[in-house]
Length: 272
Image (cartoon, rainbow, N blue to C red):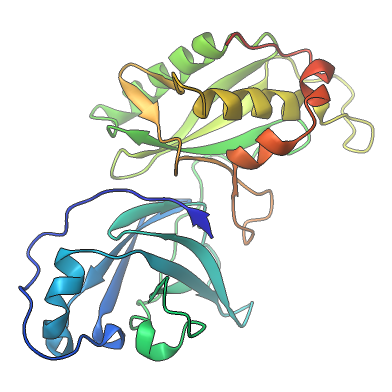
């Protein structure tokens, strides 16, 4: 899984007691924060009082997700808990369940090294339909610090400032949704002008891929990508949403490995 770490403090956890810690006695709380994200945290139970040391000195957990329609556990990311996880959409009637396993277990995710499964989680439908994937892309951006109220107005202004900073000629960023924590912003990368006669089979994806490469380079540059004091998390925070709702999002860092010629093929230019 992708290496993503959000450093958050575990509060209100018990101190260490004698006896072995059974990870399988830990619970997992998963709350939907947007149409494409969940907030995941460990929960102590009566049988996990010995896990105080593990929780007060957190170790990386691998997060797994299970859909009834897929019939298997799917590895997501590894990192510290609690964390807000982008790229997860559980909109169908079956929803999703999650569990967390110690990453350095070495036993292939055996149950004794994994938490109890979470309750069923469903994410809401997006506020706007997904854009045409040959022309545009929906991005999921984890920002630090989180946006503050009024979140909608701040997100719109933030997207405008990002567009200006990227200096794209043929693309712009439009705010779509902000998670309940203010830490995840969904934006659409869209062309300023939509072709009059659009055909997916005849439309080159090179301009869009060139813009995505430019964004990925900025996110992972020394100065980073941000505006108004809110910076995109270069380790965890830049994803392209998949066109299929049940597919996982792709980290923008993968676009850094595409041929550099893609940048030359796009009419969209970026400064920096």
